[in-house]
Amino acid sequence: MTISDISPRLALKRILLLYENGQYREAANFINRLGHPTFRTVLGQLPVDLFVEAMPHSVSILEALYAKVFLSSDCSVKWLKPGGLVLKLVRLLCAGPPDGWTLGAKKLLKVIVLTEPALKKGLRARRRALDKAVEGLGKHGLVGTSDESLCSLHEALKVQFRNLVEAYRGALHKLEELSLVKGQGGGAPVQASHQRQLSLRQGDVQERLIKNKSLLNAVEAATADRSLAVLLAILERRVEADKEALFQFTQVKKEIMPGTEPEDTVVAPLLMRYSHACHQVTQIFQYP
Image (cartoon, rainbow, N blue to C red; front, top):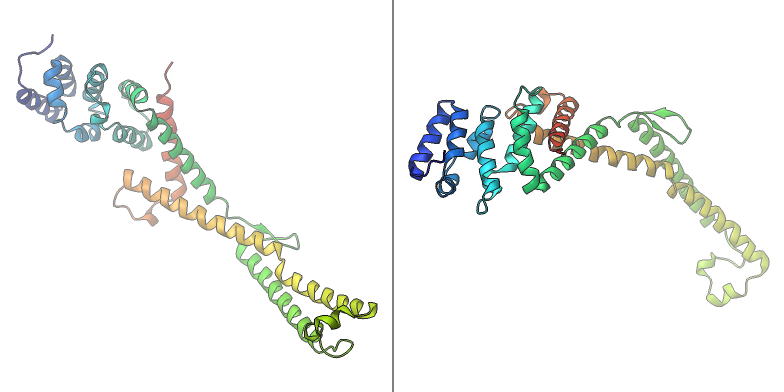
């Protein structure tokens, strides 16, 4: 039967009293019986955050609230903070297997997916980010070098930088060597006049070509180190991967284990557990 003659103040007091006494089903039944005008007035004064935090015990209360809001034309599900409820479900599943409360959770999520579909997409995106972070944590193994051997990234970089230093030394030596060689007619071609360069004979041009080609070979060896570029790209990816992993870890830790120092917890298992919980909630979202 609908309660139509109770004031909003008394209705709110009754709901809170039943909640504080742990009489969640009684509170849900009372909410279901409230007339719409009274319910609409009380809705904005209810401690929804407390109800969400009390899950799974308070699922029946939230189920009653969501059902009445969904069936009314002038109430918004946003008043019930569905985003916080979805994250609470994730935390519950992350803590352990469900214990008989998922039926009520399915009813809640059925309303949420119909009214706030972006939350489902956001949860899927969160799971993809977590999985990517875990994947990045494992991509710090051995790398290939220019001589086709395998070693750590640090050792490979040391080898390549040594090779680079030798290549620069070779280029400098070639520059010094060519600067001591006098071109035909005296002086290097850059010191000759434009008219002089236009009057060079075949032998002069050929000699200049040989010198510049020798210099080009030496300089290219120092500047076109593709192996180093590849290693630096790997290093950059690893830095970004660890940054993302620590970011995701910090976010998850704040949600499910606040106050714990980062070094007290292994990163990957926590991220994987939270990712699996996100997947479970998205599966609960699926309805025929």
